[in-house]
Image (cartoon, rainbow, N blue to C red; front, side, top):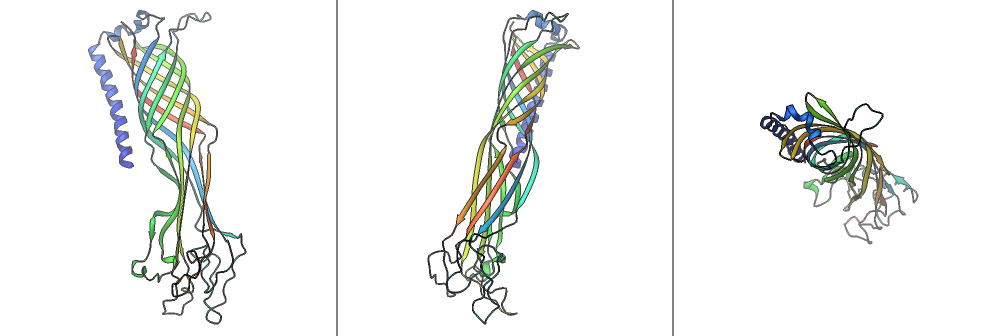
Length: 386
C-alpha cells in the first residue's frame, strides 16, 4: 500500500509539473497574448456559455477515532468428568479447577450463568489522515451577469456549475488495535501432543480498520470574479459544494484458548497436565456507509495561454466540508460454542470441542470527524471561441 501511495504522490507532482510546463510553453508561443489578455473578455461574446475541462490533483484530509472491546459470556454449568480450565480466558479469568479431590487445591467455582469477562485488552485510538487523489473536473460558466446598478463599473461576474470525479488512494488504516492479527502460533516441538499451556500460544489480537472507496464525487455552484493582475486575468471563484464517498469499517478479533488443567500447579520439575483441546475464536464483521458533506471553498484561476479557440489556465483551491448525517459506526459479532468435555486420554465424551459452552463477543466502534478538508490544483481548458 505504501508503494501504491508513493506512486500516486509522484503522479500528482508530475501532473502539477506538467501543468506548469504546458502553461510556460503556451506563454512562450503566445507572447502577444499577455499584452492583450486584459481585453480578452471584451473580444468574447459576453452572452456565450463557456464550457471547460480540467485535470486535477488533490489532497484529502480528515480525522477519525476508534475503539474496540470484547467479552466472554459464561453459558452453562461445570463440565462433566475431569475438571478443566474455565474457557472464558486464556489466563484463567475465573481461575482453575483441580483434577481431583486431595490431589490439588480445591477447584475455583464457576461464575453464575450470564457473568461476563474480558478476553483480550480493550483499545482505542485516533488519527488525522491525509491522502492524495487525481481526477477530472467539468465546468460550465454562464454568460456574464449584467452590470449591477449600484456599482460604478461592470466587474464581469459569471456564474458557474461544476462536477468532479476523483480517484483517491487512502491507506487501509487500523485506528485502534491490540496484539497482532498475523496469525496464531503454536509451539512446534509440543504441537502434536498439545503439551503446552494456553499462555504459550502466540499471536492473536483485535483491531478496527477503515478504508475509503477509490472514487470521490463532488459538485459545486458559484461565481467567477475576474480581476486584472499585471495584464493577466485572474478569476476568484467562491463556491458552495457537495462531496460524497463510501467508507468501509472492518473489525476483527482473533484469540485461542486450551483446556489446561493443572499445568501451573504441577510440582517443580514436572511437565504438568495440559488438555488436548484448543478453541480458536475468530470474530469478523464490517459496515459500509455513504458519507455526504456540504461546504464552501474558493479557487484562484490564472489564465496562462490560448490555443486557437481553447484557453488554458492553471488553478488552485481549498475547500472545507461538513459531514451531514450519521458519522458513527458501531457493530458487533459473536460466536457461541456447544458444551463438550474430554477425558485425559483424549477421548471426547460428548458433542463439542471439549471446552465449556461460552459465548464470545467483540464490539467495534468508529467515528469520523465532522470536517473534511481538500486542497486541489490543476490545469483547465476553456472553450473561449475565436
